[in-house]
Structures are given as C-alpha cells and as structure tokens.
Amino acid sequence: MRKLLLSNDDGVHAPGLKALYEALSVHARLRVVAPDRDKSGASNSLTLSRPLALSALDNGFYSVDGTPADCVYLGVNGVWDEKPDLVISGINHGGNLGDDVLYSGTVAAAMEGRNLGMAAIAVSLVGSQHFETAGRVAASLVGAADTLSLPPRSLLNVNVPDLPWEEIRGFRVTRMGYRGPAQRPLEVKDPRGRTRYWIAPVGENADDGSDTDFAAVEAGYVSITPLHTDLTRHAAINDVRGWLDALSGQA
Image (cartoon, rainbow, N blue to C red):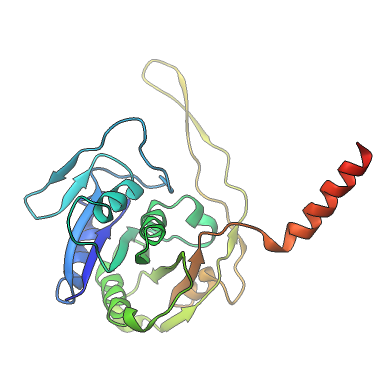
C-alpha cells in the first residue's frame, strides 16, 4: 500500500489537515508531521539555530516545534525506517495563487519533499468552508499519481475553489499569475505605547489572464500548476552577460 507523508503550515490541529487525513486514509498508509502552531508565511526556511522537538499526539499525528520544511525533512530523513512515496501538503486555509507561492509554507513543505526526492503535491482551499471538496480533489490526484511523470525537482500546486463538490466545474492546468505590490504595513501601538507593524494584505491581481491560476479558480475550476525549484531567469542570461561584458570594457 502506498505510503504518504502529510504536512501543512497552518499547524497540526488545523481543520484542513484533519480533512486531508480523512480523505486519504482509505487510499494509503499515512504519517502526519506538522508544525505545532501556525507557520503560515514561513516559506522554505529551516531551523538551524537549535534542535527540534518531535512529539507524538494522542491522535497519531506528530508535531514539530519548527517550520513546514523542518517537518518534511524530519518525516523523510531518518526519523523512521520507511520513506514515503509521496508528500502531500495542506489543505491550506486560503489560496496559494500567483506569487503567493514565494511565501507559502504549504508550498514549501511540498517543495522540501521534492528536494528530498519525493513526488509532492501542495493543496490549498481558496476560502475556509469546503475542506471536504479539497479533500476529494486530493484523493483523486493521489489515486492517479503513479501515472504522472514530472521532471526532477517539480511539484504540483493545487488550488481548489471554496465550493461544494458538485459545483466544481473541472480541472485546469494553469500558470502562475502575479500580484501587484502589497499594501503598506499597518502601524499599531502595543500596550506600552511602542510602535509595531502588521504585514498588510497581499496586492491586487496584476496578471490574471485566462490561463492563470487566478482565472481558473474564479471560474470554478480546480487550478493545477506545475512548479519547479529552478528560479533562474534563463531568458535573461544573455542580457546580463552582455551587460557584464560592457562593464568589463569600461574598466
């Protein structure tokens, strides 16, 4: 039977993780390793300044006092004898659309799995109600995962509309859209009168063309975006090379 490692960034007690476990428990052997608290926005960070605590919970899940990437690292690397066949991260409470993926701990958990040689899928619900729908989406993808061949260091970023299952219009393969600049931080005063800042909401959609993840979810489709970890802007290499050659000529 297939072995899956489940993780998230909303924390080990999050309803999305529970829904994911319930949706996949009939399809595979599951191990859950997730942060002991909300780590949204942690991106790909690893904890290097202290040792990590791995704690078993009464429901069989494991919590880690670290980041989503820490959780997957421990879940794959040496804590148990068996390695998983697939890493599933989610179900995130809220979408991971466009350049959200740069900050997302949900995507980072999947990416860490892929970096460690596992196939990986990140699943997000673009809302907060229909986790069962996202669970059914995850189960359908996991059931067909053996027939999908992705290039090395690739993963799937899945965003599910916050709709009942019967209202989902289908699946679309998409590209990442892009957001505009984030809003200004919110300035507040703490109880001692000191100035503090809340990070502001994300910017408005700047690129939500018909082939983007934004457009698919807005139209009621599940968005599936293949991602990879190579951030090189290959199309710009010659431009940068020419720029450096010109600088060298001026020296």
